[in-house]
Image 1 (cartoon, one colour):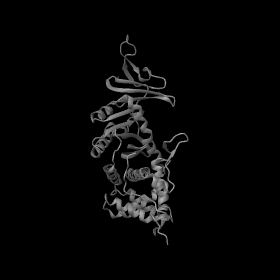
Image 2: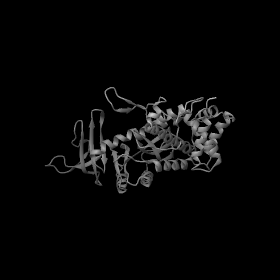
Image 3: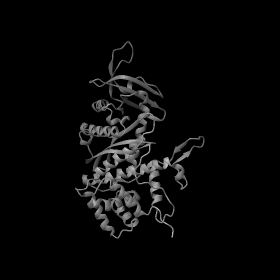
Image 4: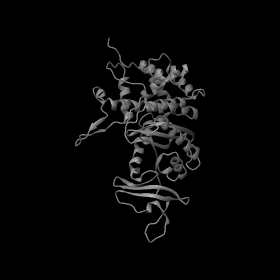
Length: 395
């Protein structure tokens, strides 16, 4: 009889062995690895779908309804905090991560996301290749108001920034940290000053009505004007150094970027070289935006959870983030050992018609998911290299 490689129960046991590094709870080690496996297989956070996969894939002797109830109780149990497990795994991943590119840049994007009207998530991601992995998040109850909500308060934004700064410097002391944020953050000059005080770089996109103090013509005095009225180029970037922003006269640089491919200009404030601002800011889209997409409509369908309690949602979201990291790690494994995986039909890159260079056609997250699905397919008699060590390779 042929040996079944990567038997489903074997994969769950390997998850359990990995999680043993971070928890001694027998309850968690006996159940959470199976739930984690089933969540990835189901590509859903819905209790019923996870329970169905658990029952079907793991040949469980437990009744389907009992599994459903057990998932509910585990997530809602106040004694279980999966957020700590997420933090521990992030530290494990970064402790093994080898930054190989010469510029030593680490790009961290941050933004808010919503789970319907139930929760607001403040998320920070590190860019790996053309996508990102979560390294810090905080969940707030309800759809928070952008003007007064806790999720948008300076104290919580600074808390996340300091955490990420210390985390990266702990494992990559010589890294150049670059924080990226969209237009909502573009007038938060105290936050920019805070990042600057840490010795890090920021690139924030700002709104076109932001005021700058500028001398438009040599014969004129400096006047306050909307940033959109600054002299600019038609399809290129105009760079400004040491501009004065707002009445408090914050001094930063600006890249006024216009392109044929974008209707709106990118108005990018930075404390670094404005020449690089457009390149850096472009990394944001493949980082945090892709992660939100994978967690929602193109991955785990987060809004199907139906959870109303913040502790339970935080536990579930921690598992979703751990799964995002795991699948991205698998994706970078495929990139590193592409020849090995090409033999079994996984080709995430492809050469263009008129080019000798390869370009990525499947994201690292989706590549990792494809490998996991193939390796854990029922009655699979082929060997698939499926590392469950959460090792992340530079991309």
